[in-house]
Length: 369
Image 1: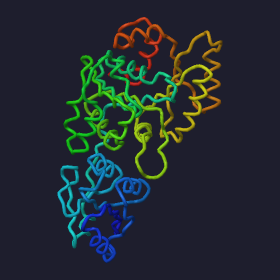
Image 2 (image 1 turned 60 degrees about the vertical axis):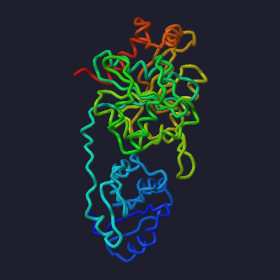
Image 3 (image 1 turned 90 degrees about the vertical axis):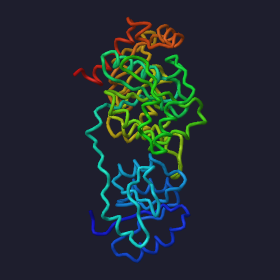
Image 4 (image 1 turned 180 degrees about the vertical axis):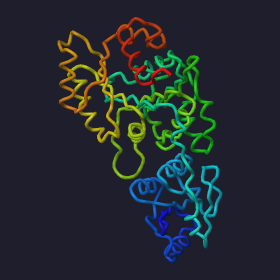
């Protein structure tokens, strides 16, 4: 740790703010990096500046367990000033007159190797390229191979996984799980999973597009981290948007942007027709920079288009710089049957070419053993 402790203050009008700022100014061992106007400003500061500690008002609007988790992930010590913040996961209390003590407080260790499950995000542009259907099919295929699988509907524009699987849930599973994290009770996440089969579970999505603000990126990341500890594979159905929006305030697309950044693999799904490919190419470009190359999955391929897979692959590679990973054949009848019966395609049409292709993808994503 550096000799001078770099701190940010997020008091949000708390009574102790003026005294804390004055003490930091007097103490040569402390350096104020930023007086943050709100929690969003604090997270932006932590992500772009070198911080050692954050002095927090436990009652600050927007401060929850997910934010605390994010600060720790960024290497920042969260410190509650003159208050008990353990319900939020804040272990250290900072006292006025002894703020320099924050420099001796270790950052809680995060055991990255303790998350054995792989996180796969299924994403694609607007226009129904088949994101949700692929997410369901990959999860079903992995579960059929004996891998413990969790399917999470994190589409901030309105979930559809529950409809595809014919399940009824009075409360959105992903909203309830995020709420538990925000309240400092991540152990309750498992209680919101619905069992679809012996090896797989589902966390249902937000029922309406105007409820997107219930999906906070930090809380959702904690939910996924928890699920990875108990599952071999966590498949997340993402929304199409990747624009973080202006300013430091929340936006609907922040959830998807975070998921693309933290996923072990991103399956980028595009539809094989002139409109679908145009949207796909633009979306892949808009999503840059990619932390790791996405696996491009081109959906709905059919001979009636007059193209070969090789021709489409060459065009996509020239326009995106990425070589397509897989082509999925068009199977409208099979998907209609799956949708109307509320069952995975592999159960209602096991001989479908789409199913056999997805089985190979799942085997590649989560190898046996």
